[in-house]
Length: 246
Ligand code: GEK
Image (tube, rainbow, N blue to C red; front, side, top):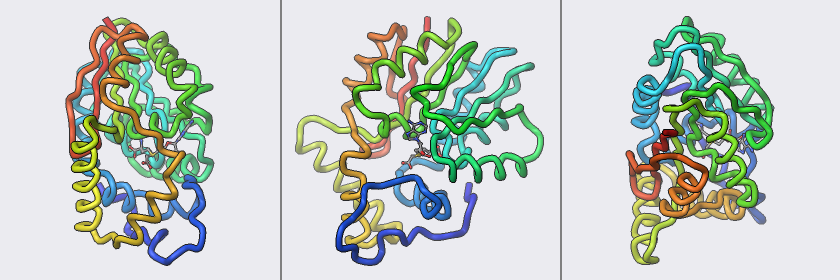
């Protein structure tokens, strides 16, 4: 799905000092192009997340898209969930993202009702939830707040509810991590990013996107109480986990 034809040139020119990455107006303007060319498997993941969500969504419950950006997951949920009385809550703490997300959802035609919130997902009330999606958002949450957020999601899910957690991850041993990082950079280069763009974006994301390993994510999910936490998708160093509440 292409939401915007504007191509991402944010890191094309050399920068004397690369500032930490922010989800501001400049990023919003190029976001669909940026994420499609940067995250291997992103366009495939969206309908598959909708498909998984449609299996776990329950009547009269809420489905959460946490860190919704421009609402790509929300649109997939709206199109694929059929449960009567279900609603979607889409949350992002970037004012520019939420504003444009509202416009996109407003133009998207009939589907499940959507409540949009400009808020920190660490402060968002999660309740009566059958599905929660964190599609490449949790990696931006400060590590000290991660356990508490997963616990609040678990507590807010109904029995039988599901969390879909997509993340950029680290691998062990270091040789495997290095190979998957190289393959990711090759993917970006094949999508038209220069070595300078790849390197400046990497610098911008240092200390902003803090990746963990799949076993670290699984341990946290199981510790919170999830009955299972399984890998269902991988494209190089980008994965998605499905955690189900018993
Ligand atoms: C998609 N899910 O297209 N609270 C709320 N929002 C946050 C927080 C926070 N604490 N931290 C980061 N964000 C989307 C893609 S992008 C992924 C998600 C990427 C938001 C941030 O503002 C941004 O919109 C989003 O999480 C991450 O499927 O750009 O790599």
